[in-house]
Length: 253
Length: 253
DNA sequence: ACCTGAACACCGTTCAAGT
DNA sequence: ACCTGAACACCGTTCAAGT
Image (cartoon, rainbow over the protein chains, first blue to last red):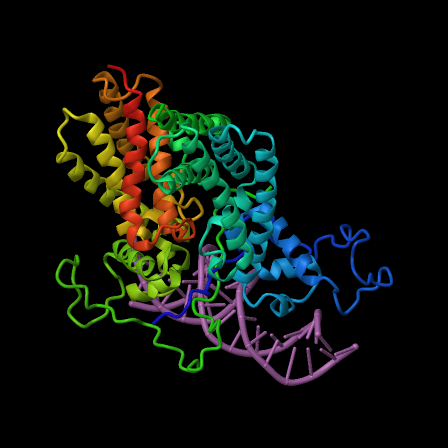
């Protein structure tokens, strides 16, 4: 029973949950828009005239959603609000994205693309002759990125928000990152920086560690485990070093 | 601006997302209830007679929610559906739980209580004379529990579903688990099973690793990282062993 | 003291009708 | 070809009214 998994749930955006004393005013529906449409829009409107066809709605929706996520977290995103910000009607997005999940998946693809770019900048700074250092740098870059872009991290990671199964973009980018990691481990083993043994296990363990660190920070677990927010990043780096030191200690040579 | 963080969002339960060919029929509102009310209900109704006062609504709601979570995942839970299953009106739950988050927090507390009980059973089997083995057993118990109770794991871990800040029950139980872990590490260091150094860092790193492993499994990341579902548990155990072996290799003595 | 049920302000999604 | 706007079936939450 229960077909795929394309249903979501939601609740009032600001259902005045707490009976705010200033409720009444319904707040403007259309946030300031246009300001960002500087010069790169295909077939720009006559100027001021709101065209019936948006021209670039997919991209505008992804951008609006990215903004929304930044403001309220990914679960709070609503397609209707994204439509409002893009200046279109509530039904319009569905011509471009069949479901809310599809919209968020597009956003996740954009976020992962940006992360991969950062990964590559990071690796460019560590010499290929020191693969263990590259492995470590990869881990640190991941955690750092997650801490600095918690919402991007969340869209990418949460299975109920996105549809990895059907996103080639996501799988392709993730595959590249994975291959990069595997290469570091293989090279480090070849050089005797890491102990021999299943390289895949090392990749998966390392990934689990950095994913766990990132999630503990983002999911607000760190404070409960005695790590103040201010020390999150430093603690994560020390944790990675603790793990790597253990591997090194067992290395041949 | 933006007050606390007690707002949630949701979407149609089964808004016929995909235009199912058998749509029409609206499906019965009240699922079979009563079947489970065997004999333990305080002031049982005359039998068959539906009393105006439920008698034990809080507990019934928590149980219904636990069921719902099991069936559809925690984000899909709706207070209205929980109310339906408990056989009360849509407004009734709000006399017992001020918000959806409060209901889910009560569920999380129940789930964490059960996990802690399991933890204690596990530790009972490993001698206090081998604290490193206890540390390892703790990690394995965590991952195993998460894999076998993915939904319980999710309610407890997801910050947007629950309100840890204001739940003494959650914080108390978590504190106990943390203290148990810290004790293992301290004892293991004292015995030279673990290298000297900040014990807290070892606790946090270990926690991040097992949390990461659990989340990778539950968030469906393992398949993307080359770990088939069937091997999730075994891989997680090997990962824990890899980490522990690294610590051991650096131990004094 | 606890529950009902209508009401309100939101949602995701569909679809005939417009441009 | 793309967008509008009403419609439908859901939500969380409130609150006067019942018992």
